[in-house]
Amino acid sequence: MTDFLDFVDLCERQLRLSAVHEGERVAVLSRGTERLEYADAFMAAANRLGAAAHHLRLPSGLGGGGVDSLVVGTTPLSGNPAAVEALKQSDLLIDLVFLLFSAEQLEIQASGTRILSVVEPVDVLRRMFPTDGIKERIDHGVELMRKASTLTVTSPHGTHVRYQLGAYPAVPEYGFSAVPGQWDHWPSGFLFTGGADDGVDGTVVIAPGDIVFPFNTYVRTPITLTIEHGRVVDIRGELDALLLREYMASFNDPDAYGISHIGWGMHENARRTSLAVDFQGIGMEARATYGNVLFSTGPNGELGGSNHTACHVDVPLHGCTLLLDDEPVVVAGDIVVPELRARTR
Ligand SMILES: [Fe+2]
Image 1 (cartoon, rainbow, N blue to C red):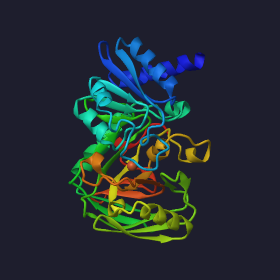
Image 2: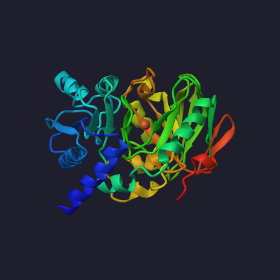
Image 3: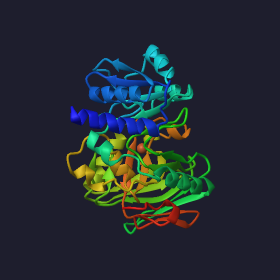
């Protein structure tokens, strides 16, 4: 019971950051028996703040969505317009299903509802709670990203890739959702943008110790990706390259080879080693790790692009240098712009 009340306290702090106040409508979406205690904790926390909460629970066994899914796009809300309409009536939707990249999520956002996805284990939620000042630091990074016309990533392992910016917005993920129509994810703590559809060129070397999602494993042999005009045109290496090549080919979809979001992690409490110990959830901690460059391939619908492939690969790269218009932002895995640096690490 103490644990539950502690979790309610944590959810209350989260709802305060997410601007929940008296008279608001908070909806919680779950599926089957998954994370029912999260639904109860969020509703209890919403009640404490004077908000009206309810819980929309979908049947178990519906395909798509969820943290175990290797493909994205279809969710348990697909083909359920009544549920979508109900959720659009809320001010804040706590998404315990994981709707990311779905048409239903975009429709709910377009109604002005803000969405916070929460699917990670409680200890990760606690460790990765948004830290003081992280929003301001991320916002500063977003400003730098918006002003830049190129983003370049290099590494001692041979990465040298350049993104032409300007076609897509710079997007913050704070780990809370306080603005109407905004989607965010708890935990989070990074920022990203995308290169022009034909404006990413160079080489990305996924080095030993880097992580490939959704494999949820550390790479042990280097994977060399050749990128031309915004497409992966060659995947070279040993076992890890073979697996990635086969995985991407299995979608039988040319759009699987498009380049998706690019950015860097800002959360000073995130641990890159989190995958190695009792890994559950979807690995937001490893994605948000301070100073990691997050490279990805596949869909760019969340940026407003037209690539809606179901093949999405996220790769946090460690030890890289990232330049905006040739100005260093991350050098050898450490953030060097004073306004972006965490006060405590
Ligand atoms: Fe991603």
